[in-house]
Length: 461
Image 1 (cartoon, helix red, strand yellow):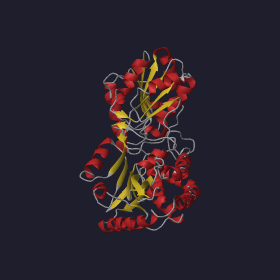
Image 2 (cartoon, one colour):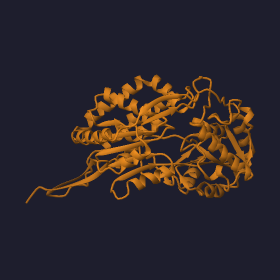
Image 3 (tube, helix red, strand yellow):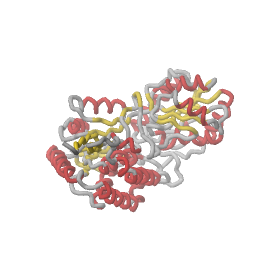
Image 4 (cartoon, helix red, strand yellow):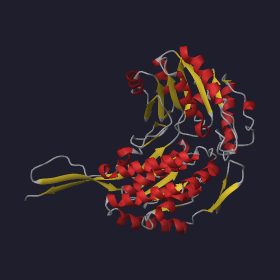
């Protein structure tokens, strides 16, 4: 059976791949189990040498990787190299902190005994990665899982199969032992079947809320962990004391970068009423400067969404919000490349919005945001929390104490002040509510890729 990747750039078939056979999946699992038994005995420093070499090879292939990325999922070529750099930042950070993060935990002296807690690898980690940030998403689990002594099987989206193959090629060139990492092209049925296989010890999934439920169901009856990074409808709040120009610049980028196809992109913006008109005017003016078009053109700043069907769904959410009373601030004709029946979709700011509308309640996953005035911090906090999602939230203010007070009341995994839509690899990446569970990145992320094993040795009898 063959899967085809249709490029959103021009609708052509960019690549085709044969799906793995049952026999090849079984062989990959058996090889992973054997390789992991030896790999877990390799010291962390030895693992770090190989994974650092992987980073060097990935960096050397960066220009080719960036161009492939643009053709597979449509991000403008002027921005695609940023994903290569971000992937390396995360990988190198997780390698650098591995020795300390995986070190034995010493509970303190006890006469006549030696005691410690050791972080043991789980075994085989199955990573199921999404297409919108295909390297940044996958690296969050692939590199730390290998550093922790696990084997990894990677199933990438059918939209970005070359990304999985790039991981495999660079790891092989770096000298990773055979069988320890394998990229598999799988159908949905094969994916759920693999999750249920007793040789898989952990699942790291990034995707939709529905996909997260499917992963949980596939793992039902098995006592394995599942890290679920799911959707978002992320809010931002601009206080009266904010640097307005900075807020406009950051939030427009946070809403429209990657054509709005980011789980932690900004979709709901709340502005204190006295600054609302000025903020809206600035956001509209800046959005009009985007150039929607061919993402292989270095001048393009806004590419297509991933598929024509995705553009149609976003249009339906826009239409439903407008039918409920929202007012579009931009005309589609301001962006000549935007055309129905294609993945090329104009950015849109909706005004006069409320929480009855899809733009303020659903994950739109496109270049759309709603802006709403609020009276004060109390109203802003209430509205930010009025969501089924809880990935990130952000506030723009000059008052760090006020930001911390607001952040302590907002139900999200990450809270920002004066920035948004960014993952710091030194901080835990985690969602709450329908945004998922589990954690990647930081030293905390290693806890989800290992199990504690206690050693209690009596030295005197």
